Length: 445
Image (cartoon, one colour):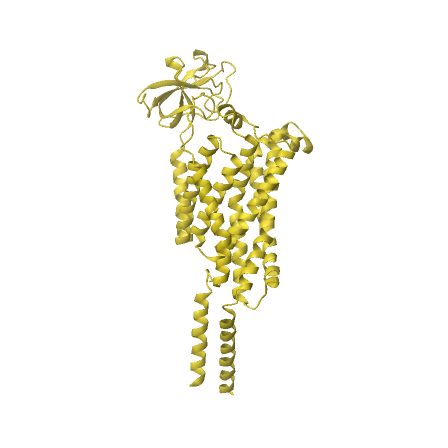
C-alpha cells in the first residue's frame, strides 16, 4: 500500500511541476524587479518618443504627375477591338507625359501589324462613367481584355481627350484572396498564437503608416523616428505574441541591444561609404518633393526596420531554447546553459544569415542581371551605389543577427540560472521518484 501512495505522490508532484514550468516559466521576484528596472525606463522613453514625434499627418504638396505622385482612379475595359497600327497614332504620348505603354514598353514610332483599341470606362472619382481610348501595341507583353479592371492616371492640366491613361492592372482582388489564404493558414496552424500574430502584424503596419512615414515626411530625424517606431513595434509584437513573461522580456532586451549595434554600424558604414540614399527614381522623387529629408538617414532607418523582423525570430528562439534546457535540467549553471544554447544558435545563425542574403539578392535580381548583361566585374558591380547600399544593408543586418545570438543566450542563461526558486522542488520530485522506483523493485523481489 505504501508503494502506490508514493508513486502517486511522485506523479502528482511531477504533474504540478510540469504546469509551473511550462511555456511561461515564472522567475523570482528579484529577477522580475531587475528586468522591470531595465524595461520600464525603456518603454517610457518609447512612449515619450511617440508622443513628441507623433505627426499630424503627411504634409500636403502639389502633385507632380510623375511616378507614384499622380492622381489615379479605377476603371474597367469595356471593349477591345483590333485595328491596323497604321490607322492609329500608336506613338502618341500619354497625358501623364510618360512615353511608355501600359505594359512599360516605349513607343518610339508606329508599329506594323494589328494594335488593340481598348475603350476604358472610369469607375471612381468625379469623372465616373467617362470613357476614353487606349492603344496597345502588338509587342506589349500585357494585353488588355474586355472586363479587365485597370488603374488609370489623371492629368487635369492635359487636353480633355488626353487626361486619362492606363498605368497598371487592378490586382487588388487576387492579392486580397492571397492575404486571406495566408491569414487562414496562420490561424489554423497557430490557433490563438496565430490570431495574436495577425493582430500584431496589423499593429506593426499601423505604426509604420500612421507614425514612421508621416513623421519622416514632416522633417523629423529618420533615424530617431525609426528607432522609436521599431522599438514600439518590437514591444507590441513580442508581448502580444508571446505574453508578458520574463522569457519575452529577455528576448526584448536582446533585440534592443542588437538593434543598437545595427544602428551604430549602419551609421558608421553608410557615412564611410558615402552612401546618399538617393539612387533611383523613387528616392529621387522623394528628395525632389521633400528636399529637407535626410536621404542617408532614411536609408539607415530602412536598415533598422528591415532587420527587426528577423531579429525577433532569433532572440525569441534563443531565449526559448535556454528556457527549455533549464527545464530539462534545472541543475545546469549559467556556463553550461550558455554552451548548450550557443550550439543551437550556431545552426540558427547559418540559416538566418543565408535567408537574409538571399532575400536581398532576390529583390535586387533585375539590377544584378543588368550588370551581368553589361559584363561588369564583381568589383565594379559592388562599387556602384545601388549595389553598395544592398551590401551594407545586408552585412550590417547580418552582423546584428549574429551578435543577437550570444547576447540573448547570455542574458537568458544568467536569468534562468540565477532563479533557484524551483530547484528544491525539482530535487524533491526527483528524490521522490527515485524512492518510489526503489520501493517497487524491493516489492517485486
